Amino acid sequence: MEKSTRDRVLHALMQTDWISGQELADQLNISRTAIWKQIATLKESGYIIEANKKTGYHLVDQGDRLTSLAIQQDLQTRTLGRHIMHLEQTETTQRIAHEQAQQAAVEGTLIVCDFQTGGRGQLGRTWHETQGAGVAMSLILRPAAPLHQAGQLTLLAGIALAQTLRTLDIPATIKWPNDLLIEGKKVAGILTEMQTEADRINSVIIGIGINVLHEQFPEVLADRATSLKLATGKVIARAEIVAMFLNTFEPMYLKWLTEGFASFVSLWENYADRLNDLVTLRTRQETVTGILRGIQADGTLQMETEAGMKTFHSAELIYWTER
Image 1 (cartoon, rainbow, N blue to C red):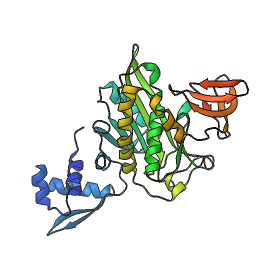
Image 2: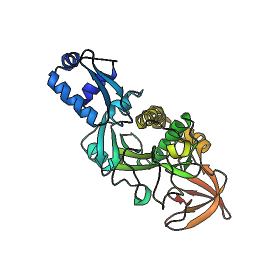
Image 3: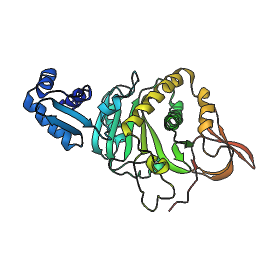
Image 4: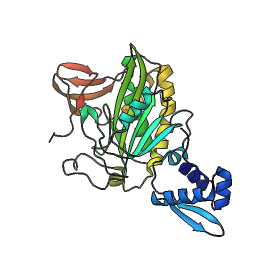
């Protein structure tokens, strides 16, 4: 996606210490007046920029920005995240991603926003958000894979996100099938949706919400939700987390395309929450209690019950009492 004039100015500022207005104008082939206007816009958006009549402009601090430029600074992928649509605010990135996928957006297109007003999670639940504190993103994939394997991408994304957070010394675990926890509290959720044509996948859209800088949650969520900052005291740039996730997820995704999910089972179990513990699981038909024994090569959950070993394709592990 073509960079805006503002992004081009910002990118130029990132590449050097000080640069004059004239140098910027010549480099970007726009007027000095246009440069001045874009600098003013960047300052209004929270970027700290020093101006000096002799030396020009200096980007002091870009803050915790979730822009395409901020993400791509640390990106090492070939495809994922190479096309980014950044929004200051939207109802849900999933809806925008569905629209973009229908309009032939290339694989790896990422929709990301600073504040999601109508985010949703598994079973249509509302995703709580605080402006400028979290990550809300949706990644468009176009895998050449059978329809029944698409759900495995939820597990794969969970592995990649857990690995990303552990690289940052954050002890994240995976609650099957689509949540990440820190010490039993939810810090991230994954929502995977498909667009299909006849019997083939047109696109898979992986939506991810991460609580990063939240300092408090509504009372109803206080005992079950946390953020990276609350859990660890660390302040981590949101763009850095997004870039690290994409860098981690891309080689996994490419391996999954050729080898399937079987080779990821042991890695998932290394990160699994309550593995070999007694858990309760709810499906549409029943509630089952047993020992969580892991997952199979196709991603289905294995539970040891009094009636023997059972497997589940779609269900929810019950950790908290609904209010």
